[in-house]
Image 1 (cartoon, helix red, strand yellow):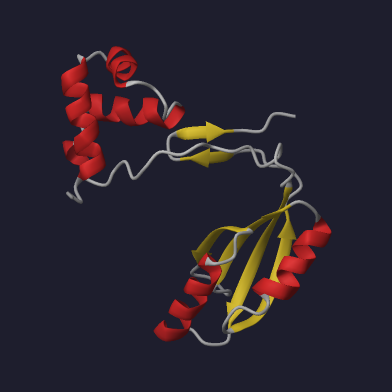
Image 2 (cartoon, helix red, strand yellow):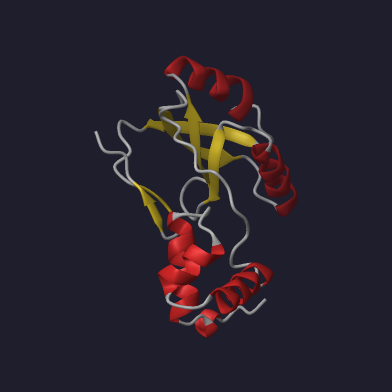
Length: 162
């Protein structure tokens, strides 16, 4: 895979944009949308997949309709930030389904977690039983989201209109 993405031309960019909007589009329809014939479009698609730029296809689920409308952001401070401790924490975080995102942060705390549950009481349980018992957690601070103004996947905005 190339690290320099300057080789992506306007057709490659168009493929990525269309697929971010509709990952189920047929190759024929994709070709029509970007202005190429089917064969070169399919070849470009396979190259983008082989290069690891397109990593997969999946259904985008609406968490609100699934009853998962409680979002909390959790600052986590660790009591040990050596590589072994970070690896243990990272591995444990990956096993908690309610943690939607986890980012190591350069700040006065170590990680920022996005946690999605169905209610405050469910969140409290996840915090008490799962997050607080993660390896090397010294303390946490929680910030509850009141509204998602903008949620964006790469090239594909998903805003929640009231």
